Every structure is written in structure tokens, then in C-alpha cells.
Length: 294
Image (cartoon, rainbow, N blue to C red; front, side):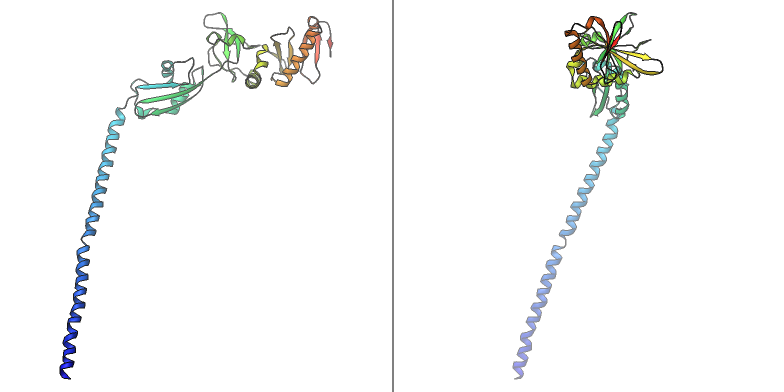
């Protein structure tokens, strides 16, 4: 009995030792795996240091290179009558200008101050280019004034009322309506006509986009001032000898009615006796050379 009990105690000891050995084995494995974590941190730290060095070098190179980048290319898009050399002179960008120092908004304002330029957009293109996109003014009518030669010449006006170029520059100018009733003294390109010419030209601009055939049928638009009253407009059709009086804003439906009435007058042989057709009111009135009829 004593031996059996003693044997049980002797047998139990190795089991306890085995558990302790297992715990020691697990502990050893944990200790063996832990050294990998500091190694990973070391790799991350090294990568961050390299990235910081690269960023510092790039910033240093930028500050060193940017001041040395000189504008060597001035590109112009959209220009028809003005070349890049002329617009470069108007731009205010001096020779030797640095890319980073160009003020695009200021350059756009300078370029748009050219008489033949309606608008301009400017951008910098890395590393040495300034690109300008312009919209030129389009001739809508012509005015006669004394030019630099001292002679009375035709000059182009756009829809904003700006006198911007000699009519001789544009092949289609002779077909445009003549704007009269305005006296321009000391002509310089870039001047803008005032009311009622601006309202008239704005309506003519709309008409040229929607009813170009009606614009082609107009030979002359004469503003007639009146003391103490709004100005009036005398329209001289290209195909008829009778001027038509109306308000100084053009309307497509009114002009079409005008053409129909003129067709009837010409067809009836009444034109030689009529001095003027009046369309200022809803009633069509024609004035004969001796009386007025409606």
C-alpha cells in the first residue's frame, strides 16, 4: 500500500515537470518572435527618413531652379489680325521675365486693352511658356471719320460700340451698314461710342446673329438727335430709295414689316412721291413730298 502511494507521487512529478517544460517552450517561442517587431519599426523609420530627405532635396531644387526659369515662349491662340509679336509688346511681359513672376491676370488686362482684342485669357505653362487665348472684335458696322492720313475714311465698329480698326483691314466691311449721325474728333482706335449708338449696335449685333439677311438689306443707320426728346433713327434700305424713321433700336419683326410695305410702295409706283416712311408707332405713316398720309 505504501509503495503504491509512493509510486503515485513518483509518477505525478514528471507530469508537472512536463507542464512546466511546455510553459518554458511557449515562453521561449514568444521571446524568439519578439525581436521581429523592432526590425519592422526600424524599416519604417528608415523609409520615413529617406522620404524626408527626398522632399527636402526637391524643395531645395525648386527654390534653386524656379528663379532661373526664363520665359522663352509666348504663345497666342485665336488671333486673326494681330500677331504674337504685337501682343507680346502689349502684354507687359518684359524680356528676361521669370516664369514664376508672371501675373496672368495683369497680362490678360494688358492684352485686352489692344483695340482689336475683345477679351483675353492668360495661363503659365511650366517651365517657360506664357499662353494667351484671345477673342478679336468683329466688325458690325462702319463709321466715317478723319483718320491718321488726314482723309475721311471708313472705320470698323463692333457690337459694343468700340471703333477698333480701319475698314480696309476686313474684306467684308464694304457690305456692312454705315453708322452715321456721329462726329468723331481726334479718332483713336479703342474709343467707345455712347448712347443711343450703344443700344442701336447691341440690337444690330443680336439681329446679325438671328437674321443676317435683314442686316444685309440695311445700307445706312442714321441717328437723328432731337432737342429735349429721345433721338430717332433713319434707316436707309439697300434696295429702296425711301428712308424709314423708327425708334433707335432694331427689331426683326418691325424690319420685316418695313420690307413688305416698301415692296408695296415700289410695286404701286408710289416711291417717287414719298419722302419718308414713319414706323415710330403702330400705325404706318408715309410722308409725301407735299403732305402726310397714313
